[in-house]
Length: 74
Image (cartoon, rainbow, N blue to C red; front, side, top):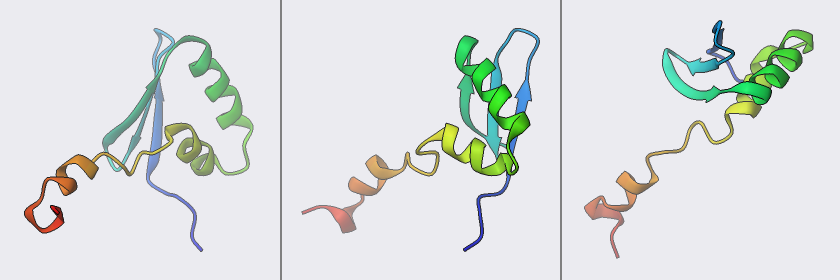
């Protein structure tokens, strides 16, 4: 099974880390969480898995739209 791909992170001077997937925002980390993420991602053998785990349910977000579709109403 192939692993996750397409994740990119940007560390900003303000201490914020923005993680995107295929140029779409997945999550933004601030403060201590951003520092822990940077430590983990720089030492990981596969940073893609680390970014996928830190983003959590990054593929979700369309459930409400799908629920309201006429085909899915009860």
